Length: 339
Ligand SMILES: [Fe+2]
Image (tube, rainbow, N blue to C red; front, side, top):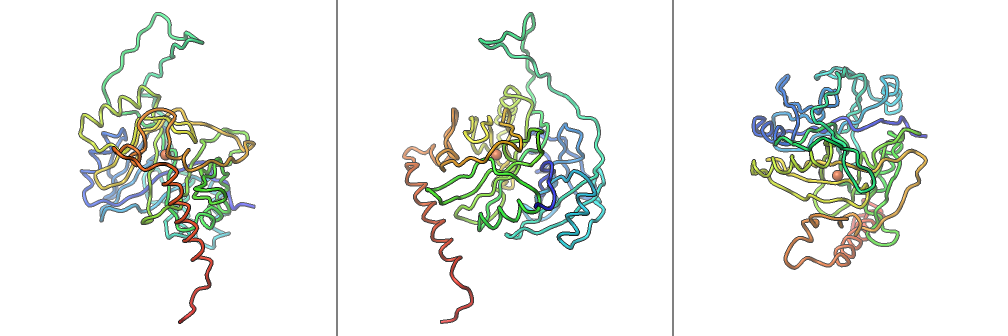
């Protein structure tokens, strides 16, 4: 029985040595920025007070935030964890419970934040397809602009022990697996997990935990934009501003999103996405090979495979599976035995 069922991701939190530099990037990315209490906030158009926070300090990922359905749920979670519910002293107010996950990541669960009306800044015109001509006697005329970010949608964390982290997040927040990704048969490297909203559709993933070689950290945070045209306008804008592209544009396999990844001036990766899958709690978990994680249905290949002589996918899968097997073997050894 999980502690509570979170309803969505709320925010990601970073520190950076220059808030002005971060702000300029985030505005190019399509967030509405403002400063409050010495922190930089980025808001989307969904009426939530913020989706991105930057504090002054060394360039670092600080925390991921999830949204509980109610303050009563927060109190339940806090009682289970034996931690306090405190006032959230940030724009929008509300309450917060602060936890630390098995890898030391700060997890901030919030509820009761004040919201304002969602703003629709982008005309989502009907599309003409062979099957349906929905736009008659009207034209498409798009204005050059940053993407119109609607909301934050997911975060991807590197973890040391996928099974331990999966159990930790599922137990507390009620996440459901959409796709478990395997480097080899029965060698899972991670899972795309979504919120359990019962019959109400939920994004294919709100959190992806990935056990991969290299240092821990946030792999990326993702933000939903109005539609495909809006994503491409954003791509054009970020390119014109000489921002650093990371991967895209393309369409993922798991989750099916059209994606576009960018790197902020401090090395954090942020994604624009549109047209992702939605599932209810009735949809069972699937298993998928690692090749489906790195391949695209169309569009730019993953940077690893964009080189002149890319490594074969089978070799990459083999090496990751080997890494996972060895790291799990060593973790299974008893600790503290002296020679
Ligand atoms: Fe993503």
